[in-house]
Amino acid sequence: MTPNQCASFRENIPAYALGALDVDEAVALEAHLRICDSCPEELAGYRAVSDTLLTIVPPQRPPAALRQRLQARLPGRQKTRWQWPSWSFGQFALGAALALLVALNIFSLLQAQDIQRQQAQFAQQIQTGQAAFAMLAYPDTRSLPITGSDIAGTLLLDKEHSAAVLIAWDLPPLPENQTYQIWLIDPKGGRVSVGLFRPEIGQRLTSKAIFVKQDISGFTGLGVTREPAGGSNQPTSPRIFKVDF
Image (cartoon, rainbow, N blue to C red; front, side, top):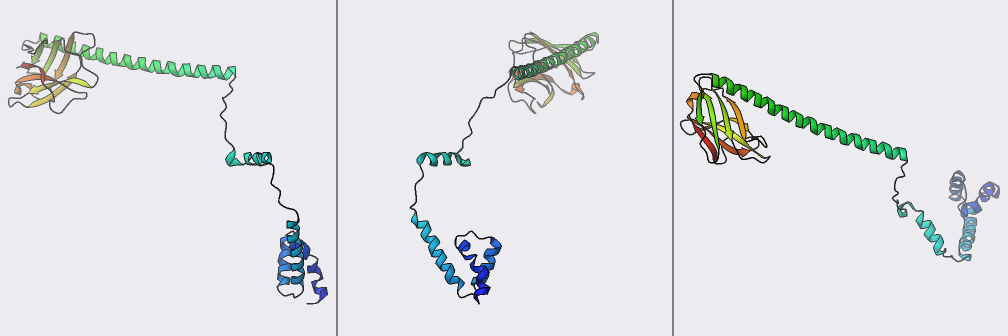
């Protein structure tokens, strides 16, 4: 290739040797070097000079303080420091008001639940009392004694209407995970559950109305056992007391 043809490429050889040539010009020069005989020799000379420049000045170790500052700026070396939130008086007052509002709502909810529980107990007592008065006014109602240790009471029984009212004194209190369960006893000793109840806290007298869909005259007695909360399919504990029909 003639010197005139290589002139434009020779101008870029020094910058190429130093790695400072633009990408497009570097691509063109590399294509020229593959077909030119003289330009590669000139490039080799410039590269020898550039390599010598890198070794003229010996490497210097940076100061330790500079190295530490640079390492501290790396994202992986930076630690998030916990800072206490700075609240203004208005923000603190608002937070206190919200906490008080939540506490009042919880207190109101608990009161409402307690009132509902008391209303349900009163409604049950009224229903039981009305059933007892109605049965006492009926001439065929039988009054049967409760037989059990340390427990006194009466069962008002109306076989014709398959209804009864259980009235017991001094039933032992139960934990929250237990309840009393009432069973009708058939002639073969089988048990049929007809209701659950719990004695009122602080009340010696406990009453429970019993309404049976099937004919109660086919049973020979009634018993009460202590069962897990929610009741059982069959008795799981000894009988508390019994009433024979």
